[in-house]
Image 1 (cartoon, rainbow, N blue to C red):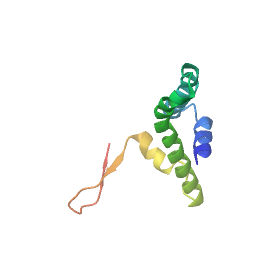
Image 2: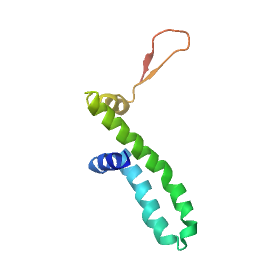
Image 3: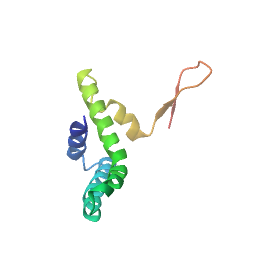
Image 4: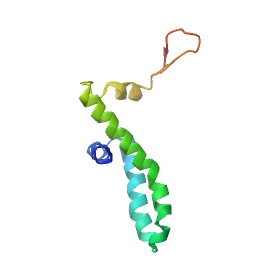
Length: 99
């Protein structure tokens, strides 16, 4: 899943969101590897990169499920880009779209 997510993100690196996560991941890998000399202290580098790795795994799962279920690749992303989110109400009423 990680490889699928990082590959998808690299393919869409022109998008600012993907560029941010790619920069976070690769700066932690490259700069962390250059600054950490002892292998025993490399756990700090892993802690810095771990959230970005989780984002890549989630992205890979999302893309794989959307392909497997036949959903369009940009279904939820279009709502994200427009800034409209469905806010469910606790009283049983249907969700409304926030813009």
